[in-house]
Length: 412
Image: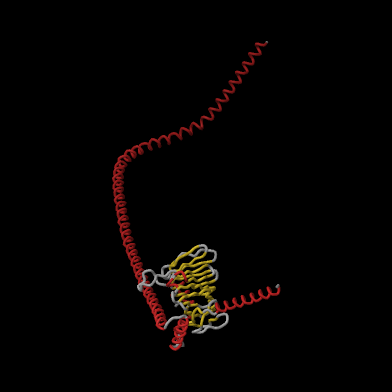
């Protein structure tokens, strides 16, 4: 019994492994799309791709530097892989009868440009692109993303709300666990870095647009190269027809699908050109308006400057006149005062002069007489004083002697 159970378990494990391997094979062989255009060296894990090759689910597409490829998916979506890129088709489910399905692609590095197809038209939320910093949710439009070290830049190219062809307005929802940013205006972009919410939507600059276009430069060269003949294009269309037949489409449906796809591409190109032309016109108009405003401001500034200068000159002239008038007034007053002072000074000096003339004469006489008297006194007085002093001294001595004699007498 034990042997029987072990044999059953072994058979079960073998069958389950075979089933799993079959499932893997079926998943690996599940067709996703066809290589439309190619430039340079583009590979998968097992082969080098060429125009017309089939692309299967979970295949990683490697585009070398200066290379690129355009993949046409079964739902008429277009995935353009830029240079130095690594892109994987993780999920592709499509029902051609109802146009229901789901597309999930992941960009590990480089650039991917997406033009949505039937799946997105039926349900705009059914197409998502995963990047290292978060996810990009397409809303039935055309957009491009560039994945670099620690940063992802996303640009909305698709038609806006008021497009002339009446196409569905496009949008891309850029988000991660920390936040979300909706791009709903053509040529608006946002950046997303690790550990941060996506930045706000802003209009792309010329340098940034050059960076996006540079990633797809190799493929543009491939499209315009003369080596791509009409026969090769026809062969690509035939392969697309075969794949669509295999999915159950009829001849008329295939023709209409291809025509619609071509027409949509043309319309989109026309719409983009028209939008660009309108933007250029608007930019030119804005530039002209700015120039006119600047000129008007400069003219106003010049006029104001002239007015200010004129006012300043008038003020200076008035001030100068006022000063001149004040000076004249002060000079006149000064001259009047001087005249009055001169009159006053003319009368006074006459009296002073008379007094001065009389006084010096008296002083001279006094000066002449005094020195003579002093000289006589100086000569005579010392003698008299000495004589007097001697006499006084003699008298005092005589008096003292008399007193002394009297005292002596009295004592006796």
